[in-house]
Length: 147
Image (cartoon, helix red, strand yellow):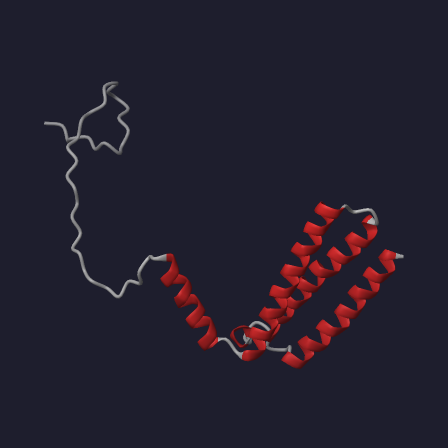
């Protein structure tokens, strides 16, 4: 008697599909400490973990990042609603906001204690000095772009 063919393996000799009886596989139900899948409880857990484990310096940087996002959105909405007559002024302001966001995100990554192993040669003071220097260069460029 030939061996029975499995449904998942293709049959090269027969043209008709073979019917296989599928039996449900039961897994034992164990109770683990699984967090609830309620979105509100997930957000509360994220906020609780963030407020307890994040240093105050990183929270300050995050607040500035939030401010930059709001500023960029407001600039874009103003450009759409009121018009963009001096378009180079809009581009300079918006690029200053986006550039400052990128520089601040880089500062956050470099000064985060969790990333100390990746940036062993960069102290938080050095990262801040680089941030200030690059911010000055960015804003000089944007001021020059306005004319």
